[in-house]
Image (cartoon, rainbow, N blue to C red; front, side, top):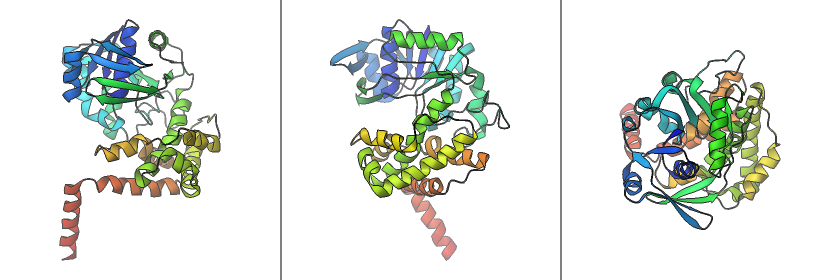
Length: 338
């Protein structure tokens, strides 16, 4: 089984080592010092008190790898459109694309049924490029629950979790999803096949869509956000707006909102990925976690007043991290006022 992991960072690297241990022919697409370190020393995974080293084929040029059985996309969702052209050599007639990304995936309305069947979402798939160039029929949904970290170039620290639920857009148990689930299980990963992967996507998104932007705006950790009456109320309002959207699309939320918030708080003094990205000067996953929920609310005719306010604030917070853009905006305002 040939598996290319596109984006061999914290999660991609963890998957790569474990799948290789299971016997898959794994290749990694990466860049920079991380790629150089993996080429020289192999990919090191620190897990359960041991160091596992895998000598994997690593490249920054997918043309070297050829068509794969599976391509696992383990990038930040907003990075995917920029690599669509580079990914094409990996795609053969039967290649499956596994979307191990946060938020709503590009294929969401494929085999969804109803009036929005075949709809693309502009906030996450501008111009429908992923739909056209990857193809919704290739997609296997994947929800990522483990926490991992790149602690040095070529070195991944596993923090907790092994769960990667999988599912076809149609809900079918196809041969390709069963084989992937079995290979992941052989590598020590928990990869149950869901008959409605969209429910699993929404369950994770439900917390991400509120806790991530609130944390980036306040610099609060999950325990503080969930316990403070003010921020807890904002999170709850956003989640109830999102649930109303999900309800319109037939999503089943298997836990209630209070339990979901309590579960996030129980994680403890954890910085969300959006806060970590802000602190490190990286682009935040605003569109796949928040903007897309607003867009889906418009499609479902569900108002999202609290989400709208938080989205406006987090977008401006990101804008203010770009000095050149801020200076240009101020120059335009000054010229207009003159």
